[in-house]
Image (cartoon, rainbow, N blue to C red; front, side, top):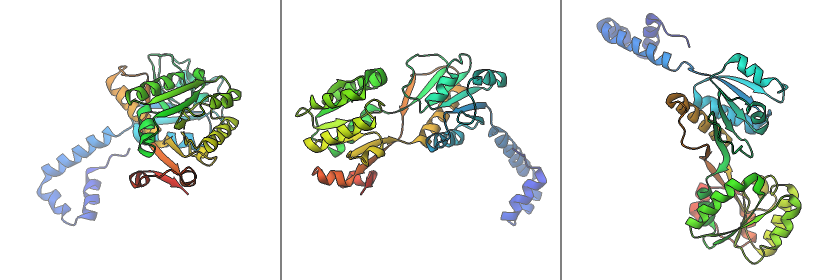
Length: 322
């Protein structure tokens, strides 16, 4: 950042306030103090850390997260886009450049850099996250805190006390356990069905017939496969059971509501985390941090078909698709 010379500083101020030249002449000590303070502040905003960001692909999801990180971190950022660069020698390249930290955006990026052990590594939009609790890795999850899922459901569907949940335990076992724990604390009955492939979803749904008031879908690529989602939508229609998901694209297929992450805010959250780590050293309170911001989206047509009234208080806060 270019630091202003004292005469230029006075001229810039005088362009806005005609009396400033007089102030500068009458109160030189004040002017010098202001000038020195400006120098200190300008030096303070100079990027203090060099960060290498490895991005899985050139898509909006990752670009939004990157922008959020840049605007939060106050770092010098060098971006490696794996859609344009072979990632085979990426670890050697990173070690040669000796950045203060590495940020992996997306699963492909994480796989390319996870062998780094002596450099701080921040990850976002990685699925599923690696349960290994390496001391140099900080995670911002693609998942929203379980309490937020259940609170959103309760606000729209207060009488839904029995919730069906189908998961692949190899992918979302850890998160589903947190969801079960949160449900128990809220007096909800969460009926969990485990599957190993998309082919198992229809039979799992059949076993839930007549036993649930709400069908919930969390980020799980097995259950989010197109055939699985179509089966869940069909189950929802046939049984008059609302379907809650994590992405608006499933609302277009027939789900009632979704609770979505904000990729820009996930990037910002990762930047805030990086600043905290740089300030406090290697101390961390948790291996994984849930996405802190959630957007509720409601499908008005599906609500009407299912005879569900959406409270005005919810409509004011949510995005409603008509």
